[in-house]
Length: 531
Image (cartoon, rainbow, N blue to C red; front, side, top):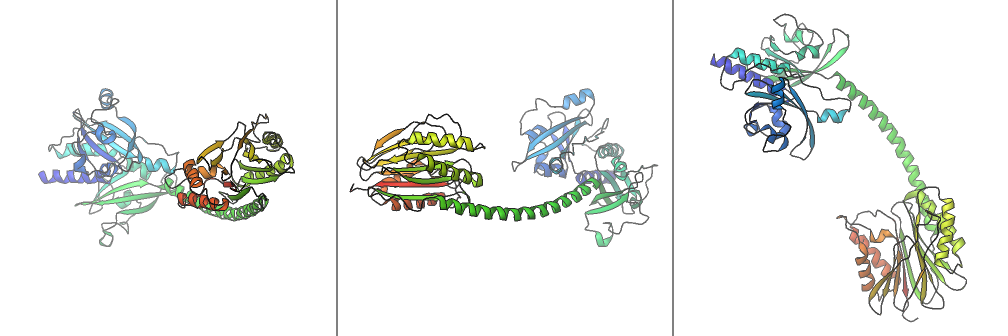
């Protein structure tokens, strides 16, 4: 009797270990876990002996005390199984979706099954959680050894609640035990108290399956794919069978994978279509890249190739787009009275739309601002014209300065642009200049303010776009104003081009290979010391 009882215990433990659900048997008093199958160990990444005597609220929610919404008492009061959806964070910090079902076994113990629904929910959103039929009622689970008949009745009720078909088969292919879900999987009924051989009952064969793990040549086989015909619909069904060997034969777990196979076939067909579409998109992208390259070359051709010839100043420029076509630009306006207009502008966005607006802004600026002595009035005119011609949500920021011919003075106005940086050699100090004014092309309301300042020999003026100070390194740290000012101070004795070269090399070294997120434009104006 003792040997038979141990055999049944081993048999049903093996049966539990084939189930694709985590199974816990928990003492009602204190919520201590007294048994966990292998699937439970895999779900919670703990060995069975590590799970033993731990509480269910600690395993699921890492809580030392009972959950406020614990369903156990409600389960006993209503004499009805309880189901909870639990979002469990595993040891890798991944969130997993568990369906936990609580069923009373007796007044002292209850059963908790955990079904990991994460993969199913990520496969298709239409697959919903299915309640598990756990009908282990009025069954006494006694961890101390009891009669084999009571334990068999209890464990049979448990596996009847599992959503996979279960067959326990001896070495002569005789089915010793089959659960109710097997009827659903096979699509047929099981009549009588004795079962036909497993290959007839489950696989509609008159002889053993050729890949049966009980055959010596297939003894290592653990999983098999089988096809059967539904007796009602006459359609082919795909069955996945998992084998677990025991001392007396096999435990076979059957799952209907017809929908999954059909879904995989559909996904493969869609992947083939996506591959063809991607090939077409790659060809289209090549054409777009070539067009953008041509736009970028056209853009560069619009930038000044010759700097103003004025003995008072030493000038240098730099421009690099973040993509093939950018939205930054700079320009020089040599006026009839000898004044020199210098501007740096930044169009919102990148790519082809920004490039088009940049070219439009350049044409409008040159036509309306030439010989206009007031920078603020010039920006007002340009803004009105852009508002009439920009039909998107894009806009332009600009800093416009006019260097006076007859004095070392300058007038300036800003349309929402970064401030001009002025390094004063005599005092070894910095000043920043800006003024109030909306972006160009955004609101046709004018109101641009104008300012002025005086500079001395050896001073340095820097006009730039935000791509300079906002350039980032691998730690997401910005280049910033402090580094810009340090370079201007350290290289104040050098020429404009040397200062520009140093600025460019330092910002590239700072970025350390990180691509620039934005276009970058700079104009350096150094006042010659012999003026």
